[in-house]
Length: 134
Image (cartoon, rainbow, N blue to C red; front, side, top):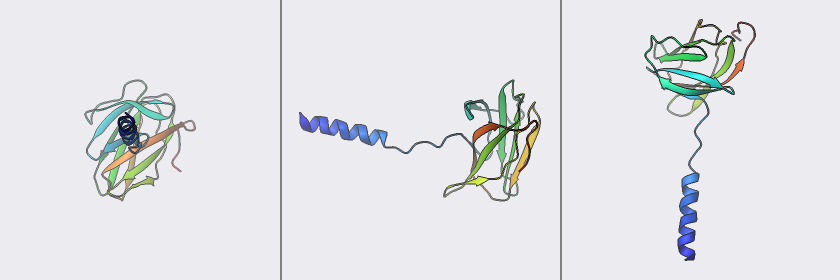
């Protein structure tokens, strides 16, 4: 009886010790995603066609590989947001400089000379009136 319980406990621990998934949304090069924001993180995310316009309260992002890594992002929210962008490569993610995401469907264009396989977006926070590029 004890070995069965011990085996069960070991299986439970092994299943729960898997590494936690990084917060945010990871968009691979060549993909477009629509999502909403809740408590500063992307929610209700799903792939979309690149020409899709975000609906009320949605954000649209497309990542491409052009002379490094390029991202277009627009938000159909009434406020601007600052956010964290991380370039995901073959080794580990590195923080990337990003400008604020403007309000009311205006497009933001980001370009980084580093080639990445994906961009991870997280930590969206309300920015100033129209945001800024630090």
